Length: 232
Image 1: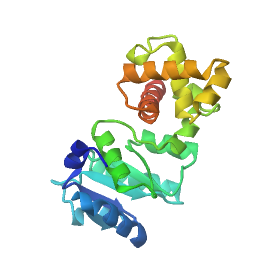
Image 2: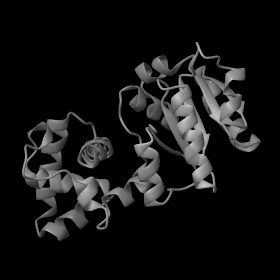
Image 3: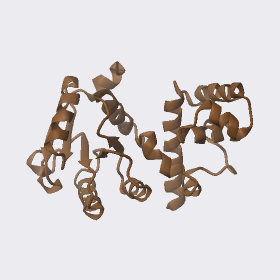
């Protein structure tokens, strides 16, 4: 069950779905209607004003990923200019290429949603976006912290780490983002698996997260914020 506070926050949301095919839109309605969410579908960004005039904005915007990446980026820029306060998500059947993820994040997209997510997962993603967090399923996050992208995605260790984490705890968090198990982390650092569990308990306590997935998503947001700061 989704947390009651999230369900209450997301009740009566008005969501604009852009370029969603009939099958996808019907699926979204089936998933979100039980939570009191209203969906509006348009085939092009320019048609959004038929539902949302200039003085009224949707609470969330969903745009389907397209093969024509240049056109997709133009549509994202149009929607961000038209509705700057509404979190905008790209819906995709699978994780896009790294350069696409980087480009849409720079364009101000709130995150990426997979089309096989449940209604509860979608509401949780909206809740995170309302809190100012970037929402990326772990498969979509892998390219950002792969060896080729690490210099852009991870924060430097020559400054204070967030939440008073130790360098070792931060290194373990990086491996959580990559999806490594406790056993794999232990093998990489040549430490006992029990030691990894001790570090994880400390990480969860310091970051005030309930589990490793929440901690990994929190670390990913820290990484992305640092990467954007370094780029700017």
